[in-house]
Length: 259
Image (cartoon, rainbow, N blue to C red; front, side, top):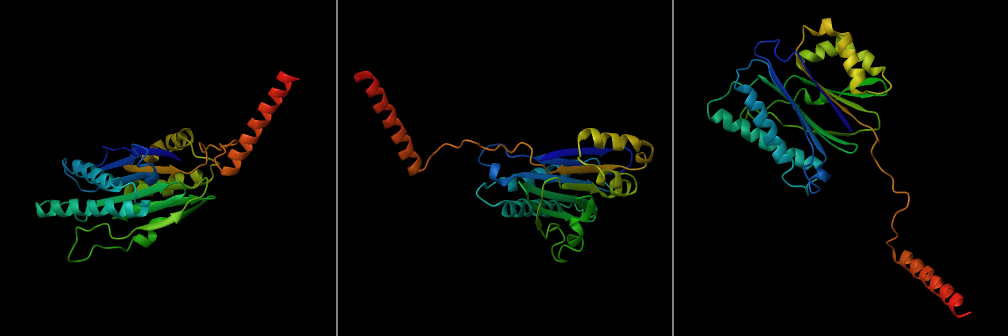
């Protein structure tokens, strides 16, 4: 799996703040949970709102990795539950500016298993075999209950990835740029690399000046998966074979010594 994270004109639009995070397991115990990606933005923000994005993302991350014995889906539920609690505490403290102003996506990937959730206007696309699929479409209509508007994460969707899939997360403004200028060229690429993406963005430099936001790409590939050609024999039968070979070697050595 490869990650490509691009922040486009981060200071060009007043009031727009966005952040992206890629969290990997920090030890062997956390490894079964996989990786967590978060992309979020405030569309009408104050300077302190950037810290809210950072705090929210790290709280979701801590909840996700809190119990390595959970399957990734349950771990993501735990992380998002912690995120909802954090936002509820903010509202109780009188900070409600983020309501209707926060767009965020959370994506958990382990091998070829995918779990994701989103809140607000942020795009989650899957590029497979040259075709785009709107993964977040079924989550578009999720709305916090009227009695708990701070519970912005209410649904999680899951799916399976295949080799050469591309999961693309786009903030609202950058999605327009992506759709108009680089979606088709990316779909036609045989493979996605930092160089090819950088060249596409460089070729659309003039058009890109009007846009601001994040483009986060998760590229699935099988590279790095090692195959054990000569596994250690650990079965009882294997032990018997090893003992027989050792015994034959001893008998052969004895024959040459005492002949």
